Length: 159
Image (cartoon, helix red, strand yellow):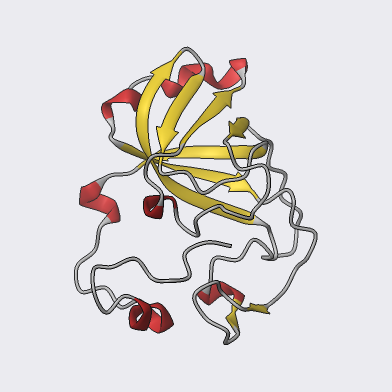
């Protein structure tokens, strides 16, 4: 079952973040930052009706990660965890996702806020964020819960 899978980008994400330093660990911690996704012309028709959603899920390739690790230290702690229990870019397939707040769709350009993606990142897919499907009740958040004992943003939210 180890057949190679070929995935091609559908566009490019542009953001103010040229380097990881200063970028939030999740876009919701820095809501005012704006980014865009330029969808390649052959995929433009796929944007039909996207503007009816308040949020979308961007799936992308961590193209700057040159490492593959099975454990790592997340930004909130000094302890190591398994790669599948953290959101590190140094994953076996270097796939990331972000939920962003949609501002507009004009032609083949999506504008959004709540950005936590590096500039020039290849976009692999877009999915609508649907409250009825994507939100869950009685969620357990593993090791992360101890960092969110209040509604305050954790101290270590930036690289």
